[in-house]
Image (tube, rainbow, N blue to C red):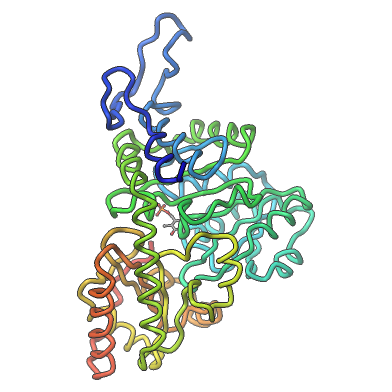
Amino acid sequence: MQATTQLIHSIPIDPLTGAISVPIYQTSTFVQEAPGVNKGYDYARTGNPTRSVLEDLIAQLEGGQTGAAFGSGLAAIDAVVKLLQSGDEIVAVDDIYGGAFRLFEQVYRKFGIRVKYVDTSDTRALFDALTPKTRLIWIETPTNPTLKISDIGAISKIARAHHCLLCVDNTFASPALQKPLALGADLVVHSGTKYLGGHSDLIAGLVVARDRELGEKIKFLQNASGAILSPFDSWLLIRGIETLHLRVRQHGASAQAVAEFLQGHPAVDKVYYPGLTAHPGHEIASKQAKGFGGIVSFTLKEDSEEAALAFVTSTGLFRLAESLGGIKSLVSHPATMTHKTIPPERRRAAGVADSLIRLSTGLEDAEDLIGDLRQALDRVRGGRRLSPTHGTVAQ
Ligand SMILES: *Cc1c(COP(=O)(O)O)cnc(C)c1O
């Protein structure tokens, strides 16, 4: 059976009523026949039937034993870090999601957990960064916003030999394209807010563990710390996941068309998209993923903040907003938005140039999207200038 068919039919029909949509169990507690004698649920922080359907669904999609749903992607990341102890070290991808960087540096550092950042697309550099204290390797592939690719299989072998865990933040690829657990990772995390939800209407996080023992530790932390996903948002996320494969296929096809268009445009300098054969990660991405995703980044020939701001305020279909993975196309300017708090020199060294622009291609017709980009690029070339706005807050 194909993945889509299997996915759609693994979502259970309600055994009580036959409801074809998963019921939302909006309850805090469950009545017990006698202390400890219940129907599998006692208190809704510990377990809720709507959330359970979602947790089983994501575990199945990622090919793991246990799934756990959280109130945000960051709460999911937080649960994984809590597996560690004071004195342990993490080796993480250098262009890590900004919120994960903030969590590591401004929360966990003071509890004695240290993080080393390396370019994990260079497997050798990753290997050299490990110390006897390294307990966790943390990667994203593709990364944000320059879409660097790391070799999940090669890194999982290193992790195993070093007796440390490998966690992959699979938000950008989604399980429709990439299954890190099958490539040897121990844990997968997601911001369900992005492609899994897919409609820009919720904040959610997920963790999937390859083996049950590790999964039980995550479930313990989910209950002990309590950052669970609500029944309604669990339902909404199930509803989003039902169309994941279809959406991701279209996001990817449009992104490929957009990347090829940008590559040929005279106002564009570099285009970052793993689906382009010139992308340094193209070969590994082709090997470990079924597609290249819906995110495209690029820089302008005129590498200035001013030119980039003129572009991002000139698009019509691409709406200027943080986030990605929804049905509506989004555009963002990392230097003044998500990466604003990083000192300019460090930011530029990490490949986030002043004119770098990130696109999340939505589900509009690709021709219309390209038309929108063409007119915005023409305006930049025509010298339209807006004064930079500095009101955006990093997430
Ligand atoms: C958005 C995002 C997160 C954080 O998820 P939230 O749901 O916003 O808390 C983590 N990792 C990646 C790669 C993301 O894009």
